[in-house]
Image 1 (cartoon, one colour):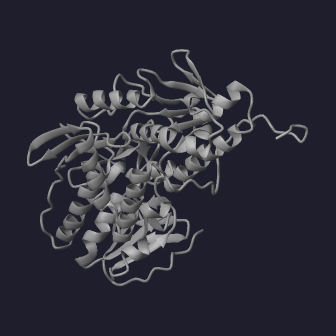
Image 2 (image 1 turned 180 degrees about the vertical axis):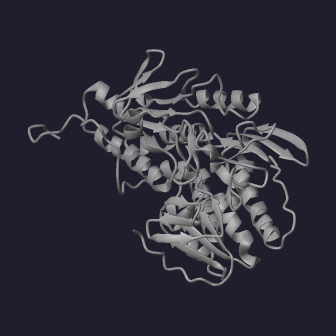
Image 3 (image 1 turned 90 degrees about the vertical axis):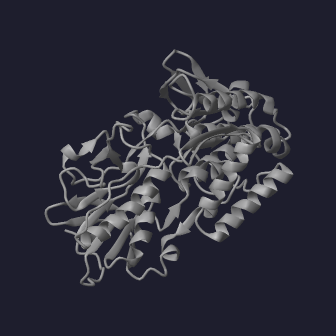
Length: 442
């Protein structure tokens, strides 16, 4: 039996937030001036700016550039207590969260656990593909890509050589499209200088999308343009195809087609990061059913925000898109509503202000569907790329991180060079490559 976690009782109402993603972070900041005790629980001691994970994976920026320690973020917020722990379950009757470090009592509980990779119950793919959900995934991908080319220098057999140099990305959303574009930039400008003994015209980048278009949810013009950019960059785009199986070497599609690759990157979808203890009727497809005040169905003092929350409306019949903006807006409003609840004031219903979507596809190329002042603006190419860079840069938490990322981008742009090409940590490998024995002359 776990003991109570050592968090001092202050005599104030206690708001426990599970998850320090975009929603949890915004909520915690909004509660700064509210007369409550805020407890933030997260299994990591830092917040990750996930939209730039793909740049860590492709050696563009340092992992630390998109991470900010919680204790630094909240060092001036006197009503917040952070604990690095994993939330295991909730006892809704006793109003207690069971964590890996003990039990935490709550008066109000906010579940902001975000999303996890959805492998659609395919255990083989889950074990052998590389997801793109956190910094460790990004570092593993970077290590694997660079390690593959080091191994390729030792290989003479053509199929094994190609298996190391070819990459398969599953999922044609923003993450998949941006990864494909970044890898194509590396293939053109960086890898040939690092590995002059390899012929990079044989490096194939495959992007597999289950539907008929890329960037589902964006405009048709953005989708068509993204496809055009990728094909111009030499990316092989496979539409209307699904991955049936992957054994670490052969990618089998539902059409019967096969692709040989030792590295498959899974960006094909996400599902809510669930937690035990919430009644089954409150869940909908891996997300919590919440009302317009973000209250979880069936509970008066439990709330869900961000990716884990499914707020069903006429415009969003399956819940809001699992992106940063809905989470940020819900977190900010819930902080204000909790203050209203404490003061016995009426709460405000959530209304999502869709600001649009963007995706970048390599140097000087991006697509942007923006919504400003009730009007829609759609742009592609260099101008969209500048907008994408500006918005992402100002959204990164911490001036130091913003400056570091900007300098990395500027250096890469001027020198056609990605500077963080280090193999440090885990790689993903399933089948051994042809070994160089002591009898071979090298």
